[in-house]
Length: 334
Image (tube, rainbow, N blue to C red; front, side, top):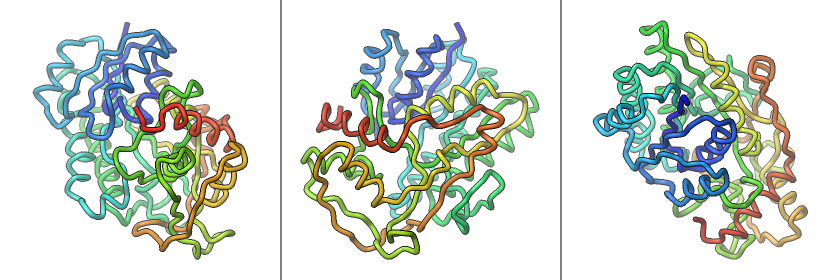
């Protein structure tokens, strides 16, 4: 059986994607340094699917260790590359961490793939690579991030594109995705940020279960319908399925797709929907704008719909219910 190597596979999106791979009878090897994740997440995936995951705790920057994994598993034929850091605010405070973890890991991974003769890659990128000078974004929107996170992901994309140009039999799909929320319907795996949450939904759920006293909404005076930031949210299970569609779409060269719901929703709308659907209280206050936040952006995902068959199926209510179920079951995370 051919296997997929998943870097950063113990993380939020990684674990949900592994579930989809295993349910499609694709073998999985995971490498993760557990910087922002826990090995318990992999154990939960194994319990959910009843299937074994080959897990290695290592840093993707460590080529010698990565080479050993490829040698031990010569049946690895494809890579899904999640490993990296993803908080805009943190990247402004610690840019070198982001260039190392997002660019250097990609270079090392490609070197190891080259050594092992593996030629299929799905890369986890982000909408933050865009200039964000207009709210509606497609794959041809101008690049030009204003923060090291987005810049580091754009650099990694360029590394992949240049590598593919030099190696005509190399196949890659770059997925630029928007905001993933929700959790597995079982409530056994979900988003478990280390320390202070940088994303909205885990902050909401932590307040809802009482592990944090108050939600802060950063900025109430943006030029949006209710003054709060507007984003494109999709259920993590829908996003996970997008990675399997990307594996099926691999062909020589590099393809790029936006993945999102194409349904912009404001921060206040998310909060109010969460309160309503879960019948809980979420005390909040409007705080000053946060450095690096843009007022509004969302995807026009026509290309992914036509070429990949990608379409989100879960509603905002589903996202709120599933994320809360995860947090109620696991108030302190894994």
